[in-house]
Picture 1 (cartoon, rainbow, N blue to C red):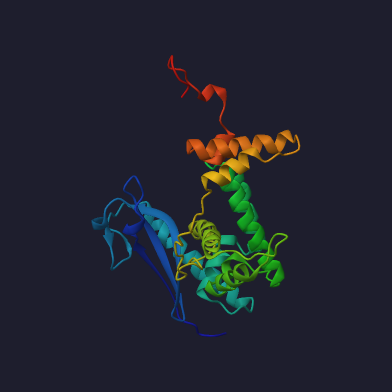
Picture 2 (cartoon, rainbow, N blue to C red; picture 1 turned 90 degrees about the vertical axis):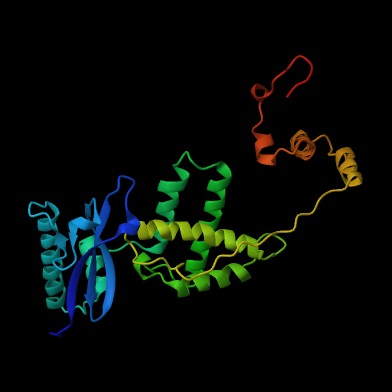
Length: 282
């Protein structure tokens, strides 16, 4: 059996103070100088209540001190159990087994789909356009994982290198009948959505640090073209062969051009949204 160094240290984390003023207590697990952080799900109300020397609350009647001692004992016992099973115990492995109970960890493919199903598609907070955009991002990320044979990669093993590979994939993937590539502004939007997913994974303690920790997402300003008055007139007068569906789309587009209303908002416009002041409709 290897004689690895091992320690568990408890400390308050004021940067993550809750809305109610509670300061969470975290555990820092260190094995052979490799550290991971773990939420104890305990908290204090004031920093003065914490004793750094004993790593416990100063109150002799504290309810969290026994819980911290129990947690420390569980981590120590779990480490010995893993060692006895022949595993090379690292701080990350110990944390993962503690959180999952040794169960099979979630794969990236499963995680992104679960995130979309539970937090995007089923939510009433997002517009249809946002749901569609997230769906597109997840579709490209899944294709990336499959093309690079990363279907078995676990969320806990995702690192910055994988994100760089995804960036390269987005920069070269072809789409549509014209075999176009994504513009940098579109690629960055995909990264923003993926970053929010990994932020959720971090909050759920599936990962110790987001793979986007050092990846820089830049805002790229796009150049917008516009139609001239002559082009608009040509657009209005072009025959569409009596296709009412195309005529409706054209009418909505022209209404958006002349009113300044966004196309998706114009699509949702109903007569109930109009008001008559006696002279004009608004």
